[in-house]
Image: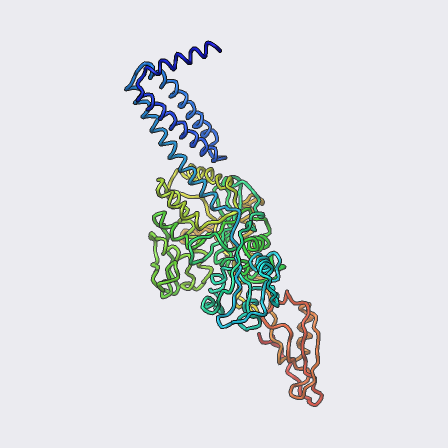
Length: 618
């Protein structure tokens, strides 16, 4: 102990004999390097699961350099090797700058990841009236207790402000809006995002000008969809529901309700580098999970938030989806521009006059025009291609295919990022316009997936992983009070689900043992689900008014529907003629158990309504 103290005193005495300026220079560089090493170590420890061995080696090397510099520096000071110590210190100073720069990049990336999976969201409900309404007595609201913006927040707002409105409850937002417009209620509670949600509907295209917000109530709460994640590692086959939100605002940090224009379920197998993309048409008629499985067009689930949409699609495909990702289409412009544009073979339109659309701000009508052929698209033109459906006879179905083209082109271009500036631009754009329920640890695992892709494709810009496209076939129908809806063929959906499960390694693939081709016909990869052009169709209720009651009795025997007859005495109609039905035409027969029919009872006429052999008028 005494020996060590003596040595320390001798060391101090020797150092005092050295140049004071040189000593200060050495110790300042040493302190700076020590601090930079601490920051760099902290940054590397954040990158859990990424190159663990390499991170340990780097941290150990930084510590060893720190010790070597301290010892060698003291020796050089004592030996008065001025030139050598300045040279070594400059090298250490450069390492310090590298440490600080490395920590900045790591922390920026980590903060980005924290931004896109924030655990909370700002929910907002608005009390809305028509512009001409001055007095509020009767208020409509949703009768779903789990709906944050339609039920929970309105209840809190009325309680906090001691409001005693006469409440009318609704099971559907479209009926809620309809009754507001028909003055059945004076005001309604609805999502703060209601203009974006409903302005695309023909009935409410002027909703922003026709309504006014009387009151707004917001609250920061945990995101509903956080509880829905499976926490599955993305180094194993996983599924993600991508929801494209068509908003004119840049950003994605408020409101649970959204306009779900694009729904894409993707399964990705990092072992085989294969992805299966299932795009679901927005008008697909399905049971909505949060509405007691009542059938509506699938985009209706968006009004009740991400959790409702996720659960609805899980019910459709029959398996639990691992993760969700909401992407604001407005951010697509910035992302494509940050990448320097994307190469897309723009398809030829069926209606060329409709190949010009508004810009991303929904202004400058017809200012963004597309030209068919392979080309580099900037952000505005990429968004126009992803949005446009009026230029194609297949409308939404063609738009889905075009969106897949844009997604593939972005993925290909992302592989080419080679400098920090471009990477930083991409991160800034994505952080504002992407929201996911993935944990930071799982997002970090994308590094390993991306590394695997680059290695196995030899860092080529042209080669890429295998993408299986799907196409859900079906038929058009008209649903009561909902208008146009798309009814899918079960066979088409089953084939698509099978492909998704095979890619997830839940099901074994079917081995193809035969193969036919023609030298005169170019080979085309089969699109999963597209070959089904017919199948069982769901019937809707016809219009029976004016028909004979005898015809309805015979019809009901084959439909398993109970008919309740109500006679109405009248001399102005034919005996047994149907006057009314309690359920309107266009309702799916599968949702009807009983049907009430008002029938004419006329004892003064011998005329009978004609019993047609043809189906009733629809």
